[in-house]
Image (tube, rainbow, N blue to C red):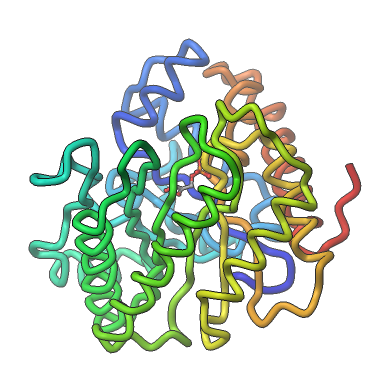
Length: 322
Ligand code: 13P
């Protein structure tokens, strides 16, 4: 999932998130439009066969068929890519922790994983959301989210599904890069502690972390190399080398920054894990704009997706040039 420069396409936007993305390009979020858009991505042959190792799907998409009746899952498999599934039910306000969230979705998850396996999923994703603000994150929220991630990962491994463990420290806000470093370090320490208590086999999981970046509204923006150096440092301090793969989220970075940061990390060298991308927005913003819901833009949408996938593939090999 994380080797040889290939990375993961996060196409698992929930109904409300895909509506937001479609609103931005003036497209109504209908069942058929969502199908057409995702079919366009999954039929991008060059991108899917050469640069994309796996696709994270939403519940609707894993059951959906292409216009000609072929299951979308089959399009992904035919391109030698692995279907995956988002299984969390979203981040909800956490009682006792004002301004923070706890990710829900554990009830009945064992049964749902069995069904998803039968539908073709071989990996899953669960996202915990950690915000940075005055007095947050709190230990109350952190520990609850880390425990939920660990329980999810245990259920996945029991169902022969590889868990992607995603604790996302948001880049909203005006905090500087060092605050992002400190919070991410704390989050990763707690997550790996809980994974240990839950008896997770680290060799059979993928970590999906944020990079160490300043808040979007911080006046102190930094270079690709500084982000790379701090991100590699925090990972070396927190992530055991038994973890085979780390696939980053893009989290609101620009397309090019998400690529440049990954490339700069690989260029540091001597890393114990495979580093790659598991981007949603940084892979899809360009094709969404190029497509804009018009059938005649299908080729332009595929070209835009293929370009971003190729740039990130090159970055994951440390061969990208701005
Ligand atoms: P972004 O790359 O847009 O952050 O999405 C990745 C993802 O899967 C978030 O859960």
